[in-house]
Amino acid sequence: MSMAEYKGKVKHIQDTPFGYTMSVISGKWKMVIIYLLAENQLVRFNDLKRQIGAITYKTLSSQLKELEADGLVKREEYPQIPPKVEYSLTDKAKTLLPILEGLCEWGVKNQPS
Image 1 (cartoon, helix red, strand yellow):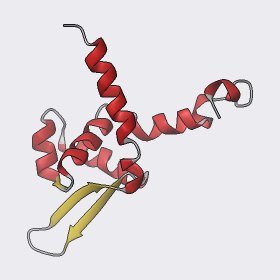
Image 2: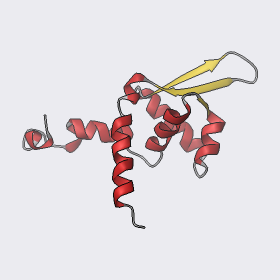
Image 3: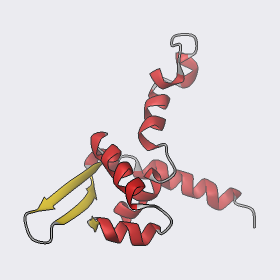
């Protein structure tokens, strides 16, 4: 169903598929995290932090937990000392990659020189 078909049928945008999608990927860092996991497949927390740079540990942890709760990120913890945790994309998240690629293409075409 398109957004036009939802017009008048719901009171709030968050009740639409578009609203759901935005709630899952919105935030300053979620799409960046998804992009980096797509590029690297398995990534440890500190490696993600290092690649992103400007993000705080608390924010990265929070964003990863939200992505995991939404079924987009898989967290694999290994029982060793020190603890080893790796993050990867789920199959559900991989279905977002063509959409993110489309956003990148739009940026290439429209970014000021």
